[in-house]
Image (cartoon, rainbow, N blue to C red):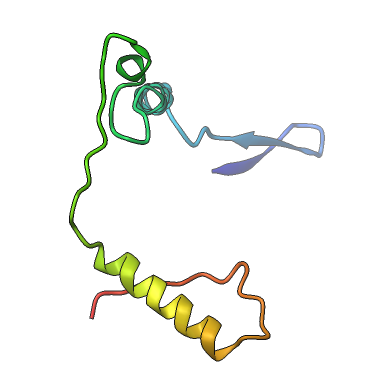
Length: 96
C-alpha cells in the first residue's frame, strides 16, 4: 500500500508499506532453497551426483490424457493449416 503524507512544507512524503513481512521472505527463501535441492526427476540433487548411487531407466506405461489431447489438437491444427507457423501457439486443455 502507498500513502501520501504531508511533509509540513507544502509537499508530500510517499510512504510505502512492505508487501511481505520478514517471515514471509524467510519462508519464500526456504522454499526456493528446498526446491533447488530437488532435481527434475524428483530426486535430491546430492543423491544424483553421488557416484556410489546407481540408477536405471524405468518405463512407466501410463498415459497422460491431457498431454495426449494437446498433442492431438496440435497435430490436427498443423494438418489443417499446412502453410501456417504454429510456433508460439498455446494448446490449452480442460476437463470435459
